[in-house]
Length: 64
Image (cartoon, rainbow, N blue to C red; front, top):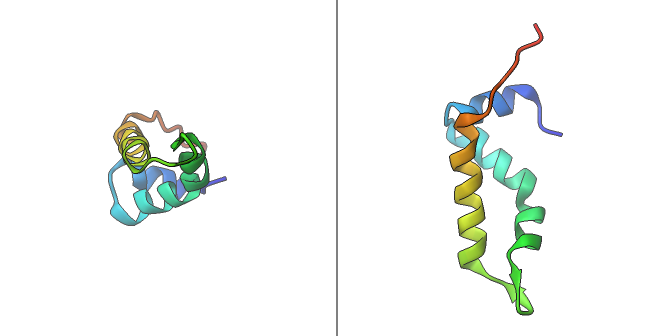
């Protein structure tokens, strides 16, 4: 699980945090981009772009 601070920074677009999020989900992204016997780079790029696009819309609740 990603720390709250990383998620918070990724939501505002900090490049290192966004990269950390992508690396966290890279296994799942590769699994979903597996097409006709191999990993499809176009699908993989699309999924990464969707993830990056969705992050700023996350509703963050700070329990502090």
